[in-house]
Image (cartoon, rainbow, N blue to C red; front, side, top):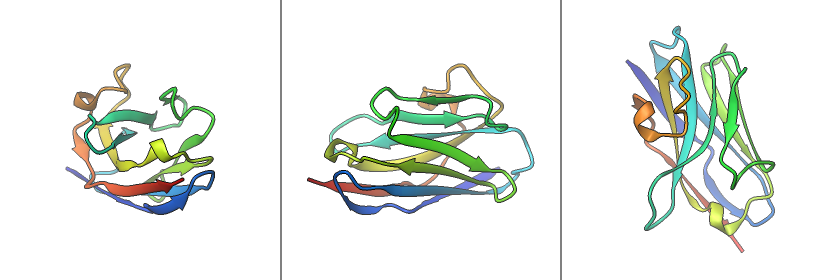
Length: 125
C-alpha cells in the first residue's frame, strides 16, 4: 500500500506561481509512476501531468503545457507540480495519483491505484 498526501495549495493571483507537493509513504521502494489530476467545481476530474519513476517519461495536458512542470525527488518520495503563469481556469482541487510501473494510459484516472486527498488551488483574477 502507498499513501499519498498533497500540500502547497492556496490562493494565488493570476500570473503568479504555486508549487504543489505530494509525499508518498508506505511501499515506496517500488517502481511507481505518478500523476497529477484536477477537478474544478461542476466539472469532471482531468489529467494534468504524469512522470515515470526515472523521469524519463513526462507528459502534460495541453492546457498546462509550458506553464506547469512536474518533477520528483525519489530520495524524498515526493512529487512536485510547479505551477507558473497560473490562470483563473486553473482553479481546482489538485490530486496526486500513483501506480506501479509506467502506462501508456497515464492520462486516465482508472490507470492509477493510489490517490491523495487533494489540495485546493484558487486563482484570483
